Image (cartoon, rainbow, N blue to C red; front, side, top):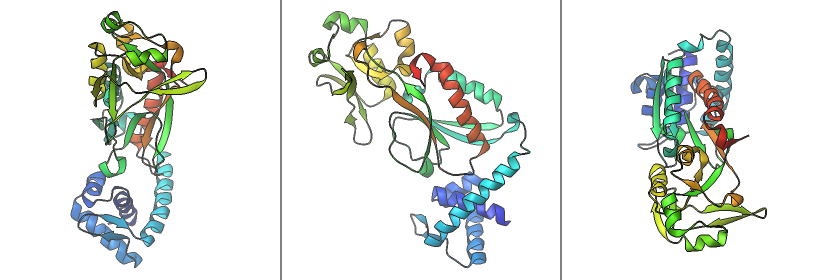
Length: 304
């Protein structure tokens, strides 16, 4: 195997930590990945990976080599991009992950437009509310809303999502509309359970410039985004969510905003991808496309 190709295989194995996933990523057989790494280690005279039955980890020499390889592959990608084919001929597999709340008609229809623009890109869409390990699971990029924990991922902000507190007209007709934050104590709520620990997600409000939190003590708890909104539509109680995910319900009056003077601070919407210099062209065009499309789709609910 040529040195440049061996470097590409090495980099993917370093990033994915699995011979099988690395083989899938570079579209060769697993035995070829093993042979490429063995040949590379033999030519360098060092061991690049520590291998066990369950894990593949870089050695200290491998970590130093990986930093140089990332730089080299980045330079090669930049050089070859000078003579890149037209966008319509871009090809390759692109795995994208989005929150369940974003799997609504507007975004899905827009993704169809992306697929039409880039017909040779094989789009694989993951939809989930759980935390996804992009590198370990081979995800190329992900859309996320909210503050992000520190990580090695690159996060490019799309905008700030307006948060809306709302309820169904039938609920308000039966229980009345809250006019102050204190009124919430007498109301039922739809509470979202987030993360692996299924912790109740607090509602946030701003009162007199100060942020306050509220967790409903009565009502229903839900651990899936679409069901969360549907429980609000069904009249189970008050809920709080990004306006992006509520737009069609607010537009037709199925849900009605309450406590607008206490709207919380907007939450960031970001597109994430693994931190590596040799970003695949199909990932790069998708990231640019998403950053352009979101303001068009959700301009009413997205702040700069």
